Amino acid sequence: MAGVFDIDLETEEGSDGEEPELGAEMDLELRGNGLEPVGHYEEIEISESSVNNGPERIGPHCFELLRVLGKGGYGKVFQVRKVQGTNAGKIFAMKVLKKAKIACNAKDTAHTKAERNILEAIKHPFIVDLIYAFQTGGKLYLILECLSGGELFMQLEREGIFLEDTACFYLSEITLALGHLHCNGIIYRDLKPENIMLNSQGHIKLTDFGLCKESIHEGAVTHTFCGTIEYMAPEILMRSGHNRAVDWWSLGALMYDMLTGSPPFTSENRKKTIDKILKGKLVLPPYLTPDARDLLKKFLKRNPSQRIGGGTGDAADVQKQPFFRHVNWDELLARKLDPPFRPCLQSDDDVSQFDTRFTRQTPVDSPDDASISESANQAFLGFTYVAPSVLESIKEGFSFQPKVRSPRRLNSSPRTPVRYG
Image 1 (cartoon, helix red, strand yellow):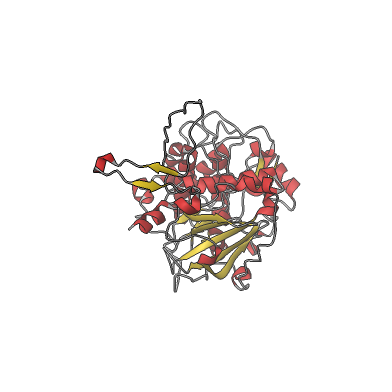
Image 2 (image 1 turned 90 degrees about the vertical axis):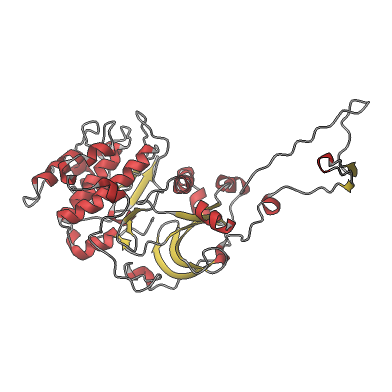
């Protein structure tokens, strides 16, 4: 609800020790105004509809489907236009999740709730903004800012590899985003090019918080086996317990991918890839600068306590590395630095930066005819959300289908995120 108020009714016990009945008529003495009217007392039910009856009710009817942007195991991501009320005409991304598929697994339910809670709690220049969240009988909806620059994955596809200056820019913005999550006790755990989006200006935004873990502060560990194999830290694979240091391993794997064309440890199947991550030798191409080589070695330390960022300094230790010596972190955070790539967009609803396998599909949000038990539905209580910025204006928002990178990744297996345990 938008606000909460308390009503205290103080009554005196009757002569027989029972409380007098509330109802019928009661005298209202408004002595503050010198009035003594007699009124009729009418009972009403206090509910969201009677108290929080604002100017609009957010639901699927508020949005026009424009394009399909992606598909995953639990639903779809659409580009949509808001057609009524506040923000009418504005373009958003709408992530639709099927309750029935999520509710059958307690871990999936927990991850979905964590994603929604994290998106509400975390506001940062390099993390996607949640604008609305709502639900129907069979589906959950997240309305997110539309990031029309597409995935960093697609940009890597086009370029093959990045120059070090380009990689440095993206890695710097990601470092600030991860540092902010860690300060709030959140481990990201699925850093990969598919989950890094670009806004219309070319700045990065982390998306898809379905594998995040909350409340992991200094000294705490968790044991869930999850992530995407090629970017997964050794301690996750060994199930020995992990903390925020896993994100710095993943950033190292991503850095290697940007500079060489593939993650550091890959093979023709999952088992061999895992073996390489646990025991394989890190091979660094000779064309990398000494600063890049040094940082990669520090990120890809198998012992998390020896890994850069794995200590108490976290992101601050990463920012001090010579590879980032030319970065003005204050200007970077304020998004005053020009991105190396600015998407060429013709309009607010331009989807040219997204995979045509999806954007050519007819956007259809299938009928909401699935039903789940009342007890299962209880897990999604409190899902509804409206961003404070929207409420203020009234007073006056990815898991995409896994992809295999084309010719530059001939030895790569599909990077499917996994979660077990």
